[in-house]
Image (cartoon, protein in one colour):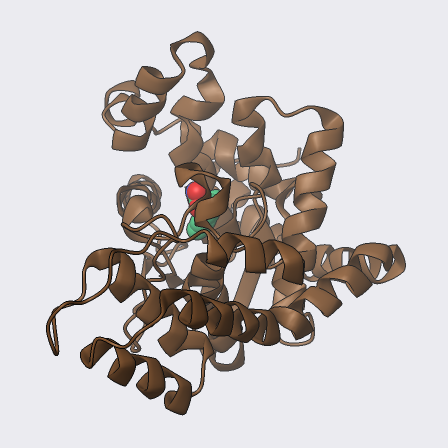
Length: 331
Ligand code: TRP
């Protein structure tokens, strides 16, 4: 079994795009690997959340991952800030992380451009904290999306550099976790591109959305004037609705509307109504679970306390080794 580590950004509610992307893969991965999943709450301080917002978003994301099937019996689930050993390793790695290479990171440069009023040292050293997150458990694999590839490269650099500097093989060099199944890209409702909340509230269906909200959003989804020729190629907004339908509806339903489209008899209103009901049906068990877990603070406390214990056990071991290698010794 391989050791896999991944951080979860505590930002906002999960939508169907997240669910069919990272979340589903995490749920699958936990059965086949020794998984550590943590909520990256230290990292989120770079944007200065208020204490209430910080706690609420950590809770929300924890609840939604658990509701989606992340299982504390299978994976070690914890809050990053419950494992202070990570911070010590972060400090140690920072001694060998150079200003130039950190400044050259794309995500750092982007932040400098987008929020010039808040370019703090935490942002600059975001990649060293990420490296500490992963190598503290001697992980060999990290599931990363496209936007995190450079951060993975930095982790590899810092792990290698430590090993080379101290002539040790303490840290395995982590690799990207490759998902065998091609990820399904879930489109948004605004006619183009992926589902994402930055494209506007109505573009995404959130796991925490009530049925009424889902109905309203789907009925407002962008369509076109309808096909005028048999078997006409679908425009992106229509293709997107079919992609969503393909994920949540039965094959019969999909085929029914696809035939209607091909024979120019489709009524988008009817299709959207069906799509909305199928999304609602698909999401209902997750929504119920979200509601149940949100009020079950005892359970959340148990999950995070036990997760932190297991994560610290692993972290303390690695950190003790690192300290010894570096030369910290008692008199
Ligand atoms: N930076 C990641 C993100 O924005 C979250 C993260 C923090 C992470 N530490 C990590 C991911 C370690 C993988 C491994 O999504």
